[in-house]
Length: 237
Ligand SMILES: [Zn+2]
Image (cartoon, rainbow, N blue to C red; front, top):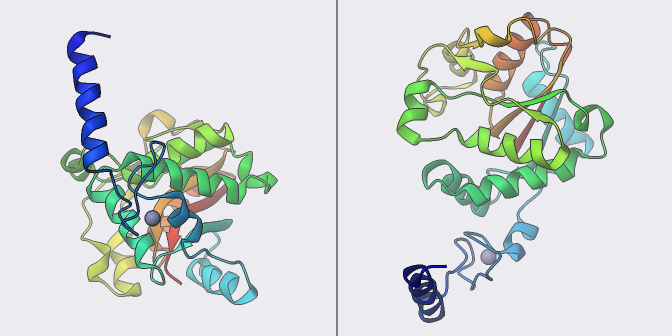
């Protein structure tokens, strides 16, 4: 360690002592191992409990066709403002540690499901390249990478490509979202032959109407994927 490294470490320790970092959702002091959100908050975020009603609500988003074989989500997006804040930190503030945690929670959720935890590939819903350049990263891919690591599944960041810019989905109702996203994805040229027969775990940050996940899954199945499971950090129910 150089003298200047040592000095900046000391300066950091003093700053942490005077202004200890606080949890973004409860303002409690964060420990050294925590960042952005404290463990207490993570453990008390509103969770998806798979009751009959909830399963039906989730399946109703995907029933129209059989593109997606199963969808698992961990947190409730609308019911808990802290979940929305965590997603915001991940999407707009580059909070990688949030992606890591989301990945960990999703992994714990699906580890006991043999089909999901033994998928051949984990891959994200892609951003359009222009959007990704602006943001500097794809938040869903950060989550996918974390899941790949936790479950030991091969991670592919760019199996799918977004072929055209779509308008923000929040501007549309369910039917409008479906039309807005139709034909917006393609399997990357390099993987066209490799997708055949694969069981794919598709990752999104938040599932709302499900139309994005469905369109991605249709694209993968069209190219011969045998099963597509989807998982997201949060869901609107
Ligand atoms: Zn907290």
